[in-house]
Amino acid sequence: MLLSGGLDSATTLAVAASHGFACQCLTVLYGQRHAVEVEAAKRVASALHAHEHKFVEVDLRQFGGSALTDDIAVPKDELGGGIPVTYVPARNTVMLSLALAFAEVAGAHDIFVGVNAVDYSGYPDCRPEYIRAFENLATLATKAGVEGNQFRIRTPLIDLTKTEIIQLGLSLGVDYSLTHSCYDPDSLGRACGHCDSCLIRAKAFADLGLVDPALP
Amino acid sequence: MLLSGGLDSATTLAVAASHGFACQCLTVLYGQRHAVEVEAAKRVASALHAHEHKFVEVDLRQFGGSALTDDIAVPKDELGGGIPVTYVPARNTVMLSLALAFAEVAGAHDIFVGVNAVDYSGYPDCRPEYIRAFENLATLATKAGVEGNQFRIRTPLIDLTKTEIIQLGLSLGVDYSLTHSCYDPDSLGRACGHCDSCLIRAKAFADLGLVDPALP
Image (cartoon, rainbow over all chains, first blue to last red):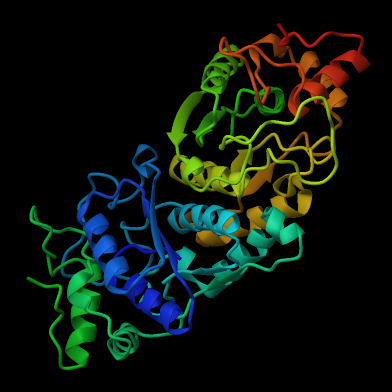
């Protein structure tokens, strides 16, 4: 499974573990501006008893084209429509491809990813039709597929609102204070509270009468 | 386009250039055992007047599972059936994903790749049905696709025999002495002449009454 250390991937790991999967986690370091994500991923994998945790680096910064990999300002205090500047070109395709390589070598055919099409901030590579297309590709792409195995891209959060995701995670014992979702943390790694990602989380916790435990 | 510096990708670059494309080349360093491929890619890009040439590293060795990334012996003097030990799990999916990221940022919608389904050595991710699945995925995956652009994965060699590929390249002025395809070169980077890749090349040149100029 792909593990970023954010709220969604932490919940996805808890769901997979609750279904009895021995989870082999992959954190893809794609040139994020914030190494704090690596630390969050380690904390989450450890707290939720991941079976294995690998890291792979691939520097998407050299292609540019995103506020998450370039020096483009992250928008604050606005939840706009359309595809935001935090979109990273082909990010989920690159990450799922790496997860597919890991899965094939490990002999796994279930790949979990915490994508979400409800509060998905407009990313095209979080839509169900994209996930089905990748599943089809994965089976055609691999020796495992040619040998008759069907890869499944498992997206347990895809139809849930952020509030429902948090409810699910809390019911499974996820400690969201360990997670990190902010696009623009300060030098100490603390969430800004004002970017898209922070605003969506904060609103969902508020709807449950809670305060986001990742906020400083 | 994806450029490895091998015979097929050099020919593909020549074909794309002959159709008037300003070629932006991407060489993916996936933990090959042979840095000699990097030098070959640079020579080929330069000789064929590539518009741009980028390199991206992603270490697939940590997943293992292939003679090209592990310490598994490369088979010699046998052209076997089935999927060979030189298969790298999900390699073309990882490489095409990175090419898609590069293409989207560059505003390009045509991605050239030198895959070949005739003398393809049994790799599942060289088949036409795989390429069509990736094309479908690419359009669903991206902001460019959502905005109405159709990505095309262009595979001008896919139906050609190795002999036909060499004839095509020679007609376009490709200097095959610059290319490198060997899976197991010596410490000076010279082709071994005995691995799958060398045998397929040597036979194709011989069928044309030629000697492979990449052989020492």
